[in-house]
Each structure stands twice: as C-alpha cells, then as structure tokens.
Image (tube, rainbow, N blue to C red; front, side, top):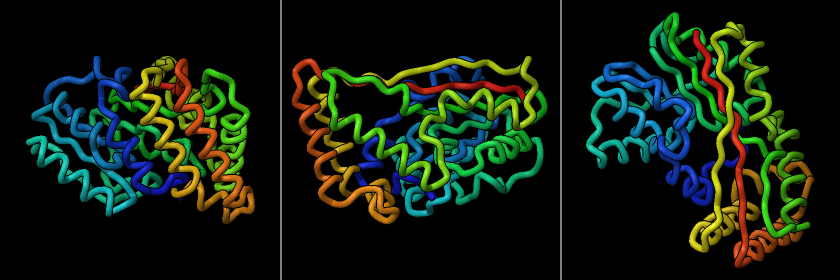
Length: 265
C-alpha cells in the first residue's frame, strides 16, 4: 500500500519533482543511448527528464497505479518525449528479463515497501552487469524546520506510527546502504550520499505547508491514521493547522533530508 495515496495534495508534490531537483546523484552517470527503468514513476515528471538525458535510449516508467500512469503518458506527450513508455507493474516482480536495462532508478519508493530488500534484488536482476541501480529516499527523522513547532513534531511522530502500522519505514534514507548490501550488491561498487529539498521563500513555504495541511486531512496518510486508530479527525485537523501556522512564519525554513545510493549491478 502506498502510504500517501494519490490524492491531489500528493500529486502536487510529485508533479513538482524533476531530475534537476530529485536525481542530481544520477544525472552525471547518464549517457545518450542508455536504456533506463524508473520504478515507482508516479506522474512521470522525473522519468521524462531522465528520458531526455539518455535519448535515443529506451526508457520505461513503471507504477502500480494505472490512473497515475495516464497522467504520466499525457505529460510525456505534452513534452514531446517519444522515447518513454509507461507500464503497470509490481516492484517485487518486475515484468522484464534479466539484464534488461543499463540503469534502474527509484525515487521515494523503498520507504513505502514492506520488503525494500526484495525490491532491490529485483532491480539488480533486471540491471545489466556493470549497470547502475540508483535509489533515493527521504528520512523523516532527519527533517529540520524553524521555528520550532510542537504541532510539526506531533505530525512527524504520527507519520512514523502510520508508516510502521503499514509495515513501511519512514526513516528510509539512512538505511539505503544497508538495504543495498543485504540485496547482494558488491560494497566496492556502491556510492552513498545525501541530498536535500529546502523550502524557505514565502512562495515555497505557502506551497509546502498547504500541501501537507491537505495531506493531514485528505490523503492515504489521513485514511491510514484513522483506520489504524492512531488519530481522530480532530487531531488530524490540529496537525493541518500546525502546518498552516508554520507556513505563515516570516522566517520559516524546512529541509527534507534524502539518502542517495548508486550501486553497480
């Protein structure tokens, strides 16, 4: 189960993502003509950017949600990128032969899976020998913000509880290198790093705070919190209000920490 679901408050965040703000660890390694698989591609904004970097190489975007792939196809068509196609698929059973791709990419996927190591083994299987598996995931424990907010601390704690109830891992970023090693990659062929998103301008604060205020009351996160008895509607609205209040702070600053790994197959 995807913790966030596909409410518009979630897709607004996904549509904002590009290779430039979400895959800088991978971009220097891409070359014309490479084949690439993007697992958990969502609405395809990063996928299409990656396709531009490897054109005329074949690119496949894979996601378990058919409805979001319609948006991805429309985005690719609007962008005039014809070297990418989008398919429904399962990260645990990738519908491709062994050694099919030069690059296998996954952004913000492993944190939502109950068995991220199994998914990494599949990514390694479909990567060609010497090919690259690139993963990036956020780490909620590493998020930082100013001013201090008890409401946002409560939100982070609830998010971790919801993730745990679903068998997922909110603090995935710090675990990526461990998962990659467990999946059988040679440690000598693994590069580990970190990246951030920072929201500090008035426009960025307004966008990020409203997005999360909406998620607190109307998204897969909200539904799971209610279903597992971890919060009620009043508590969720209070968290939404904490996000709105932070968004109004003149000196508000929020940093999202990501773990990043590049692993040779």
